[in-house]
Image 1 (cartoon, rainbow, N blue to C red):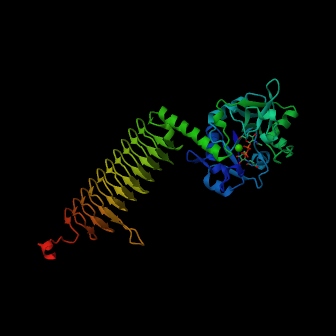
Image 2 (cartoon, rainbow, N blue to C red):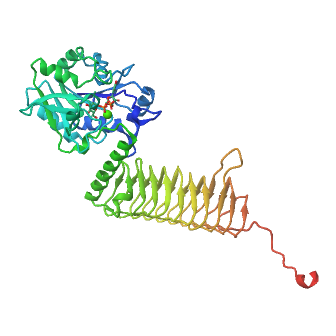
Image 3 (cartoon, rainbow, N blue to C red):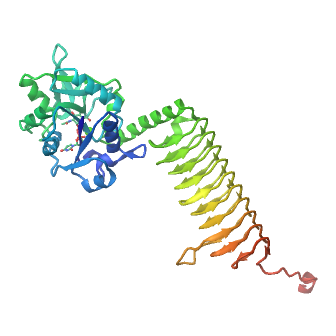
Length: 450
Ligand code: UD1
Ligand code: CA
């Protein structure tokens, strides 16, 4: 099975400077969903027609063949631009639009099966839409067979009342398709070459056309506007949440839980409200995530507790207690059983197993050993205005409150640092370092002042 995907349109109704098919649902471009569904349905080759913003589409999408439609003269014209790509092809080609992200492989397979077991030269997927506005309407003969598709802008008032719409998905005899495309005219309200007109022409030539109604209308939602994009996002989100709950994840409030397509969550993890799991985040088993957590491209182990925090491009190992109010930045690994929270920022650092960063720290470019205790207000001074330097802290070191560690600097295993120190020299193993002005008490000062 070979697939042709139409994705050259400008997407005028999106009012966007970016091509419509790159707008995201569940954190992934709409076009990617369509490609994935085709591949999953058994497609061996995907040709994508691009035009508007083609460079951006090529950058964002891989593993397909691209063909240019220089001017966007309609869906029929778009298919015609790919004529050369299908010269050697035989049998059935599947045609999809890049703006139907909710379409599933199951539905495509069903359509293929229906088409292959019929004597139709083409079969179009249709859907019963509660609100058919904007779609092409499917007109049937009195015996129920396919008659034609009328675009909304060309439809009579009576036709506009029809709820069965063209989903923009077709199985076509590839030879017949490219033959008949040459006969399509643009004498319609939009002055475009409509792909659905091929069906009317073929029918007039005595061919049989199939029209197969999709089981779930939601799947065929075509995204033309931002409002439809939000509708698709809502449906996607519920599907994703339901899939996770079916796999043993507790989602306390699915309405306020936002999980991207590629995210995985382990069994018996509990997700509390206002949580965002984005990109390729993976979460282990028996975690409690949320409320108010945003994880982007995170690798999270088992038994992690996290609340009120934002973490991105980093790893959190098993048993970590995180938050409230933690910002973990890229390149960080938080080791197992670390306790970290109450206004702490960590960047590009490795925090060893069992270490504690319980309040108000900034740790950047640091390699920290195991079971280190970091006092409140500790700051790594990792930047001199030009370059970044690293800080090393050994196992079981004790960093007193309000310490400044001026990098590059090494603190040995078991070393102690007195509170309020500004450490500019290495502290050897098991030493105590105090680097602050000595306290002076002036006896009888109050009386003398008088
Ligand atoms: C199209 C159908 C309509 C159907 C609906 C389903 C036509 C004429 N109309 O309408 O019957 O109900 O889809 O969602 O086919 N494209 C190109 N080149 C072009 C024009 C469009 O590649 O010159 C691509 C677009 O990028 C898009 C797809 O074709 O991915 C559909 O185009 P769009 O303008 O969204 O068509 P609709 O008006 O939604
Ligand atoms: Ca559309």
